[in-house]
Image 1 (cartoon, rainbow, N blue to C red):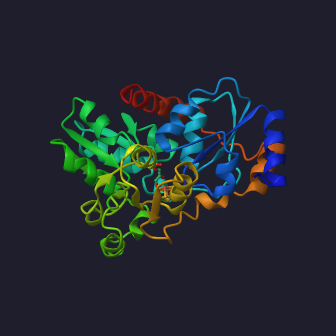
Image 2 (cartoon, protein in one colour):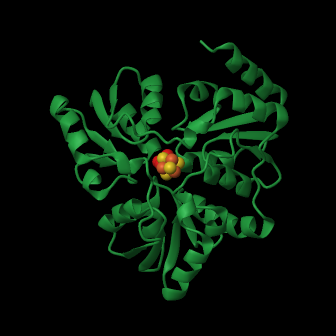
Length: 305
Ligand code: 13P
Ligand code: SF4
């Protein structure tokens, strides 16, 4: 049952012809009022299909809302709290990409969507954790500059013959760095039948003990379709909230309860309500950067089909 504030949000949403997009790491209260939830790729695809809406409230981090703007420059895209930045996206400023391109002029540049728009504008194509390998394999070039997540770069390098050059050195997600093989193996001892599903932003030693390495959307699909009854989930804790809500008959356990993305959690119901009433805070990207970044976003969507 929804609370009064959630009911108010649903009414405002209708009044404003708005849509609420939410990443899988949002809290239960926000998941309950979202029109659409997904991983970064699913949110990107959804953001490319919202012609009938006037206002988009994006409950995710900065790079996700920016990507929605790049795909819809004529729409109002708002984010409930402007502090919701992905620290990893800020680890790769555009000059650093340009420097790497000068050093490796024959390499293709594949950037994770977790980048700022200015870096996206420098990429040949983007990728997410759901399609990184497919995108890399679809390119003609044998050398790939890949950033900013060095663990995702490591994952891709394990599955391709191409040379993967991570940029910048040490790009990482502080949340996924929290997982350790020791914590997971401890849980596994108590639940030997439970497959371990790990996000590719986790360290290599954690990926190495995984049964599967998946995006958050891939985890949802796996838990829904697999014959297994219990699962150990190594990604942000509210992914488990979504799994429990949508697939209650399966047991899903967080690999580490304190793996919380504080940035994602800045959004609250009060702030979502404010976003709808005052149509704030607007997310925009300078026109020249948005036009260049759109090419790399579109190429990813094309290659993901
Ligand atoms: P997904 O695309 O797998 O949801 O990952 C996004 C993200 O930011 C993970 O930390
Ligand atoms: Fe960024 Fe990590 Fe949070 Fe994902 S979980 S939004 S990569 S800080």
